[in-house]
Length: 188
Image (cartoon, rainbow, N blue to C red; front, top):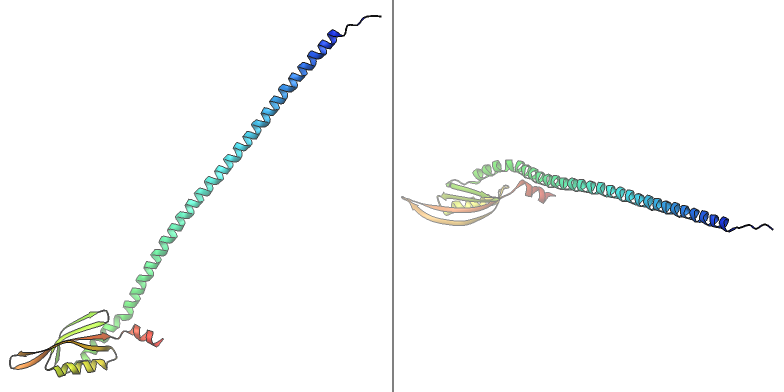
């Protein structure tokens, strides 16, 4: 029987298997490295995309905050303008009142009463003057109380002084002007 030596064949087969194993191991290491690299690249891309979105949102938020600040500024400017318009309208409505006031004071002034000064603060009116007697001052107050443009007459001061041979009464009378606005409010 012939003798066959199988040892070299086995040795070659073992080397071949070991070489195949090393090739497979190197291939799997390369494949694993590729998978890890691609995964890392995917995560980096996702993070960059999210950072870009966040940056866009921050830019939009800053723009909206500027718009809100501008709107607030416009609203406060609108309120100031409306307040000015209201003041102008009030002045326009009260414009004829001064004419009525002077007309009414000249009508209600009794004979023998002369004004030296007149001061108006809001609706309060202070009349300073000279009358031939304190009775004339009383007549002024009665007529002012019956007026439709004047109300609440009150005397602050009446002094009788002598000017040469005649006596006269220096007076200070306070009145309130009846405003057209208060008439409108009372009528509503």
